[in-house]
Length: 483
Image (cartoon, rainbow, N blue to C red; front, side, top):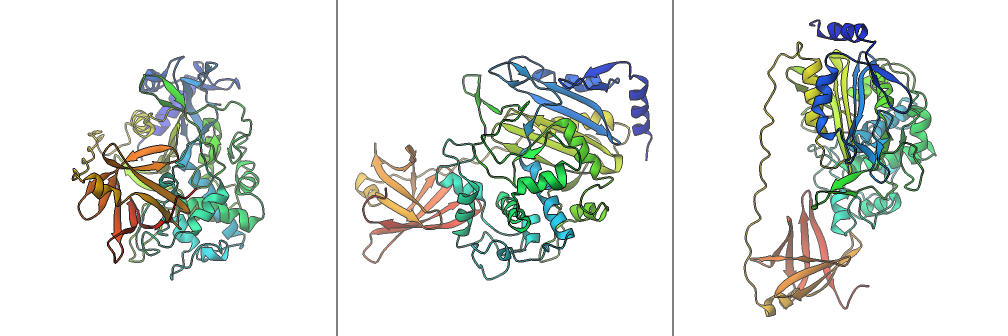
């Protein structure tokens, strides 16, 4: 290994007289020649009137950079600091994964158990879905974020949804996206169900189990699974999204759902979690628990996945990486780790349009400059989504054949269709969606597709809905209006 780490750490020690204020706790961090360069990367968000981010750099078990940029609460102009508490979205998955690993270490469950042993309400799909399938995103269970969107209750909406409602929704699904173990498909549903398994096996809420077995032992005093939307959280940074008027709107979750998301934490607390990967203090206290966390999944065909237990393994510029990104409405985050260098970058933002992954890599470019073996890749340009195909024209009489209410047992929800202003519209929780007609009784609703079917008399009797990985949701026409 090259000597870059030693040289930077030494520089940090020599420059200890120049200190970066840590925030409300009074903690300070060493200032090095790289500090100003990191500051410059985030200068755009170094304002007093916009959301921003908390940034931390960890090296060999200590913080070598920590600073907040922007505002945690726009109502009162409270600044973001390294002690600000933010949601970390899907980075939460590694915390519920280690709870499952601890329960397995205690002999209270096995990764190869059928999930129906703990979730008996889930359907029997003919082939067992195991806890291991959930951990490695190979279960085939439909994505709950798509399902709640289809009933007009997307993440962050005013309608919200509860843990109980999500369990019931997933239990009503009559089909999988694919057979368990066939392939990898990132699934929030799987990690949500893992949290429910933790609750049912441990006998306490998953949030309480995580606090007792993970957060408290590591001294992560400002970290928790946020499963009480009404809880008061000191130093919480509120989430925001940009508006078309060049301003911001509050964008926060109104749900008790955890597992796939739900952890709130600080830059300083995440140092304790990061350090535990190198010297484990959880469970039985051996590194066997960490080896379990690092074990990658495999498909039935034997293909090794890049995903382990809430951790994505990869490489950047010739160095091995692990970590995860996250988003939760008005929050986005990145946790980028270089395990061989014991170096990590954390970026926690309270602005939905922030791009933390790119900035985390740029921070790593500065600190690990003399250790990379490959050039920095170009950011490139995002590929534009192809425009949906143009539709056909149907007469009012033709469109009226599709008018009525259609009910899905899997969603336990009805869609109401009417003809308005010469087009077929779907009314969904008070909002009107214009549908574009296509040949063979097919309609497009954004990127969703509805394929209507007719009975022997030629009357429209139902349709199948396809939306991303969720394919073949069945709706049947019902008499009268569904309340």
